[in-house]
Image (cartoon, rainbow, N blue to C red; front, top):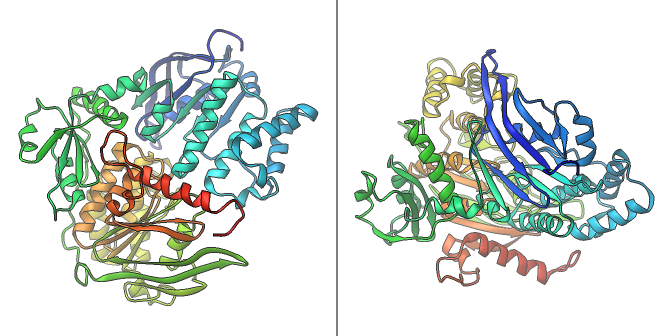
Length: 590
């Protein structure tokens, strides 16, 4: 490494132009340093500037002001020297899906000039560290999401870089695979002195970092150890016991709408609330069974943002509503809306879904959970009518969606994992297109589009091409398009993947409101904190159902928490899936 610091960023600013040609600051006066062997986490809401900062450090962009050097080289004048010596993994890493694991690694070795004996030694080390030894002959396109991320990381490490820059490497990756990937990063930092700058939307991952930097609207709000961020919520975090018979998520939504509540999240039969006891609304909490609670990093993160926004007379609360007038859902609460019996899906000789059974009642939020490659996405696609079952019975809203008439399909709304609106169309054009696709015309269509614009706060982006929207607003547009026709059943496929805590809070306030109106919601997610909002869930692996029931039913599989508190659903998930791994060796059968 040339120079004292792996990255030396001094008063860096970056200006872009929006679709109307107006300039805006993506980064403003950002300064920080990264030393040898440090893992630094980069966090912040959508549009905060995280990706821009990482791309500046790689030399792929030039700063508009200030200076940044990487490995001692100026990123503006010596970008090619930097790019030869770093490992960089963007959000969409370029694996070649029609090449095998080994062929991908060979290709990247040739690109980086790594040859002969050194290459063989490096391959052996990386494959062992990532547990990919048994899969060298498998096509990259046939790997699970977690395995693809580990292969991408291996390809970045082939050239033995001193610095690794990772842009949200764990988005869409299940908790077990996330732990494995972070284990690799910590081992490399400890044993080889590798420096890592990693952006993430998972708050718990900050605990793996020496320091965490939090960006907001292009400004660096803090650069400190994670414990100092957590401490910001000390004395402000409380647990509220929800009376028996009350829905936890309903109380959580009510509390979240109080202007001075910083954050509220469900946990078992309680709601965790972050609120300053000196705030004017704190007396409203005292009517509940209130107890002090230990803060976590997410609590501190939200407290920091709340404090920053309060100083500018803004707030963390939504600029769109959760109430929809005139939403009519047929049937009655408790009626079975989705019934799955002995559901099987085969792809040739491979059984992706193996005799799965569950049912969902009207107004329930139901979670399909499991590691990458568990079969949940295949199950999800069959539920939506996008894929036929090989055998078994699948009934949605009283019909088989594969053969249902268009009037039956209009009961369904669908939000895909990947942004699926038309990127070259504006927000307004997308809404008009999807309203027409649902058969709306004239006054009905105009009213539906205007309602969604108001309810999702889309007015200022109406003439912006959807591909240029910030991530949080892409999510809003996806939801608005799915809800234009006011469906009775809503399918959400990892709809919050990569979303920050602020965007997640907006999303779940909306979903809770819909469920209260009788809308049935089916969701897949890798973020286990979100599963707390579900009334019921199923955990799948290897195509079979390992566990199902309420959050409390699932939590019963978790080991007893060391502090005697409520174990998390992530603890339960890891216990359930690890038991399956122990019971079924790779390539074996139960």
